[in-house]
Length: 358
Ligand SMILES: Nc1ncnc2c1ncn2[C@@H]1O[C@H](COP(=O)(O)OP(=O)(O)O)[C@@H](O)[C@H]1O
Ligand SMILES: [Mg+2]
Image (cartoon, rainbow, N blue to C red; front, side, top):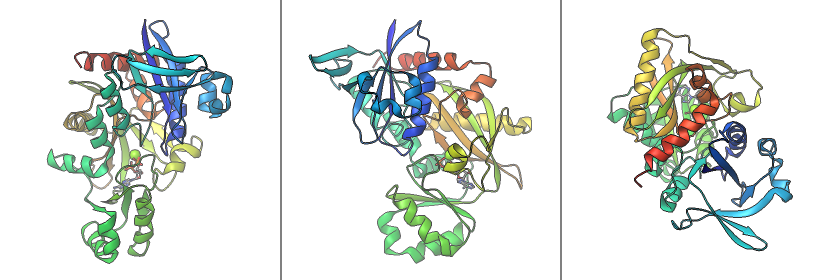
């Protein structure tokens, strides 16, 4: 038996999304092959081993469930290779074979946790620190997409100090090079937090200021009138990208509310009802982006298919996409013939393959 550690929660605007993903992982991980522990990180960054029910993770009540909480920390010490549990009787050491950081957004998906796990020498699911960090930053991914010739919306990025020094200059540049509508996004965020569709110059400044509350760098993009296509990628050096899905947002764009709060009003179509050429183009470009960023394990790569000409344009990559059994990522792989439990097993195996010589 291997000992798998599931990390959940996190100091991130996507904390709640992580709780749901982690509960799904805990409910579906193959317990004939893995002993499983779960460590939750609160919104203010405290760490606890949680031994209660997965359902209490999903609904957030785990943190009040004191009989099932033990203060815990991952050790960077490779001889520990796992957790310190701070029990009243003293510190207990628990060896861990593989970690699944089921953490979305900042402090979990952005390379910080990955760097820590690399330091600790513990195999973990997903991308390493560098590719996680690069994939998280939309200015970096856009630069790389340009560099490798993957088409995308027109864009530029601007650091806070430069913008604040001369907002009018950037408004003029945006109007001239991108036009309206355009999208303003924090370079590093997720779940549409801080993303605004800007329809005219007068609303640009408030959108920029909102985005700057989430990051010191903001990306502006030409608005694409397109269908939203997503592709699940699974693997290490020769990853599979078997399935493409479509999201039909119930709002003007796929904002936080359309993603998580409006019930099931946003429609998901798997496989995406597009022609075979578009389907394969998405799969090819998804693999190309995944490999160019040095990703491993899993990612969901998102695209637009422009209505006017059918062009497939890269939007963004998520290295730890929403991961419940009804999330887009898993639904796509399930539709490709891989049950949810098997996806988890495969990811844990890929983690151990990748780090076997670390
Ligand atoms: N350039 C764009 N053109 C049209 N819609 C966009 C563009 N960029 C983002 N959007 C809309 O905003 C949503 C969130 O933006 P996205 O870049 O995916 O950020 P996040 O990482 O927060 O998901 C997208 O799903 C899409 O609906
Ligand atoms: Mg997105």
